[in-house]
Image (tube, rainbow, N blue to C red; front, top):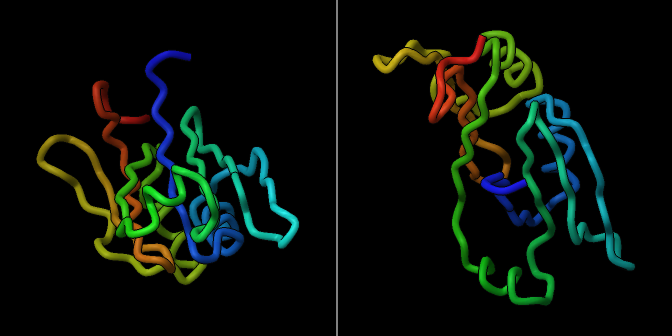
Length: 133
């Protein structure tokens, strides 16, 4: 599918990240592939028609080496009900950076930080389109 964007994030504890994305943020696990030492080599999780790929830091290969010194990333996910999504994250102990807020550009969103410092924003504004219903 041309034009599809899937952020890819490396974690020190990829298994904990997968659990947080599923439990607190409502992602669905598509697949998790581990090496012989139990480290996550590649994982795919979806939310709606979007996906995120992730893996463990410290592996070999060009991608892992290129991201070895990478800092936290920010990912934006369109959700239909910001307040319910926010409450689910709160219920799972996620650090909330901003509460659900109506924005001047027409969307409603909130920001959270995962255990490894990545910032996740969830809102109704759909880039290139209209607000989610």
